[in-house]
Length: 408
Image (cartoon, rainbow, N blue to C red; front, side, top):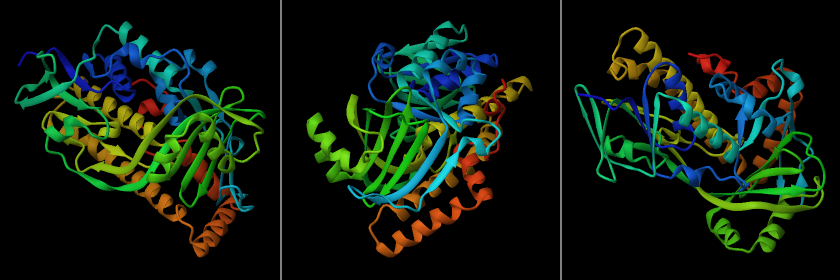
């Protein structure tokens, strides 16, 4: 089979471009097929969407050669405060606090707006000779064979490669067409996402406030601005999302509190239904899944993109090293190396986030007392705090080279 590229990537959000750049750096040719036109993804105005990049994810961006152009747009995460309570009553006095000074690596991570990260990926893809971007096109069929895999696009074109990467989200068409099943469940929660301007400085501290309906994350952005990821039971969230901005803000205020002074909405508002979903397999014949196509977890601790970038770093290392040894990069044993590397960490994180959400998203007074005691005990133990800080920074996982800031 003649190939248009070594690797075909279906999905051009963030994981797809990151993987394309990593593979191209290793000398492989890549075609990225993105259903959403690039000019719509590359919005120049602030829309409220941002990501908490763990330190290990920042190192991936460094390995791609892009961090120098992004660091002035990022907000270092210098502390994390986790507490529980009820809307309008404020947090419990028993809380868990992490400070970046407790680890040698410095800031635990960086907050970065979606528009800045995607724009950097897009510019780098357009400049890379080994990457072809098919913008505004979707994969509607795929056919693996002994020499590669052919995909049919919605405009009738057929592209051929050695392997197809599904990076096309939790409802991955690539995975469905390969017969890959998923396990998980609906949380009965919806995440309300927005950004706010506030009167007082945040000091680079991220807050996680656990309430019975679901957690509220307050994540620092540059200046007097923070990103909000606010989980509510779905029916309540849908009603809140239908409110106008003024009414929406009045519902948020008692949950948010007054520790940052007066607040106001900034940018657009989004709503995302929450579901735990993990693919039973990450690989199939001439096919591999990364990011949300492989796993979707609860947004507690903001680990979604971080898990995806771990996939990117691992898959790039496996494929580039296989190519250097003269192996078929899509051979079953090669793809199995990636699955073996990533599956345990993924399931561990998915189950862990699921357990935390189940434990905290209820109003049981006995559990509330136990949770408060647990937060207080961990906070009093330096070794335990250090472990959780390194976990939040992504430093406890088996690290591919890119997660150490090194090229493959």
